[in-house]
Image (tube, rainbow, N blue to C red; front, side, top):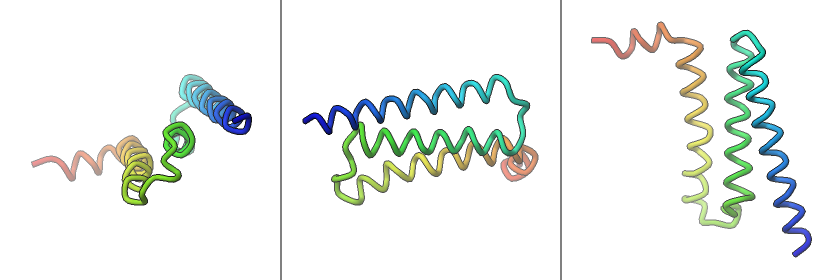
Length: 95
């Protein structure tokens, strides 16, 4: 029981640190490719922490687990591509 409480607290601390780090970087830094990739990376890491430790899906059936995990890798990738290459995205989606 004690180990579960410590792991839960550690997960929350990691989430808080990554959230504060992402907010600080987004507010202070000039937007660049590195910043976008760093912020999207924090989104992915936070998603994995939530899915694996807080939702407890590390022991779930692989199909459910991988669908949930893929969301936090596909969505940040789409966000990064749309921020880094808006002209290409506009060209691909225009009539």
